[in-house]
Length: 284
Image (cartoon, rainbow, N blue to C red; front, top):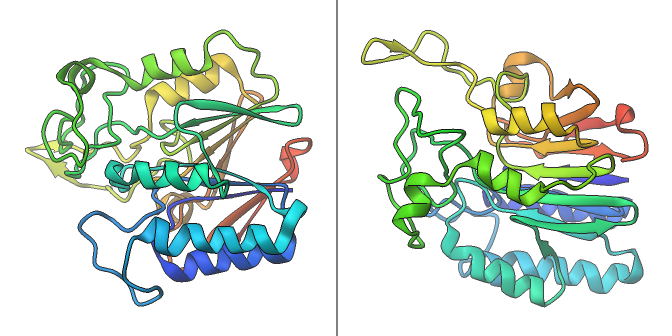
């Protein structure tokens, strides 16, 4: 069994539930789909002690799990998301060097017969933190969105990257010409115009321009349609499952799952890559 979660947003109770699940169910693989940390401007919650969230709170809990489970400890694969300050990437990499997880952004690893790819960037949003935002397929900007060259960053990026790099170009480079029959994509952004990217923007306008209620990535959607990986995993749009009543979508042969959730619970997607039709989602 593989377990997928996303958008924990530094909430100690959600992380506790995930660690308890790992200890009890012993999945083979745990995939963490971004927005894992407290927002750069958020206050600490009362579920955890003060200090560095990754090195003082999160990594020690996963290290304890590894010590307790031994050979049953899962492969833990993660990316960050648009609410995760990129300045924390170094702490994520330090914990990866300690062996508690593997950092997957713009990388590929193999798990048995499967190849797992990670990608954290999302198209431009209305929010000010821009560490993990890219133009999608062009320099088009939706009404109300803040362009990547504006806003704030916790880690500098070159002007050429900010202004000209796109999600579409990144995906072409990451996946190249590889066979994706047994590929699993770990994305933060959901594919555009699906049940997974439906935002609560009904009737809203910016300067008389109506807002699109679908806010996912056109590049991710086109990639799935054209390359047909086995499974893709998504988060980012918390309210999508509540608004659509669906947390999964099928695009051609590709099974697309979302673990985003706008309630206090932890949304857990369990799936077997050999039988993705049987995937389930549970709120804990």
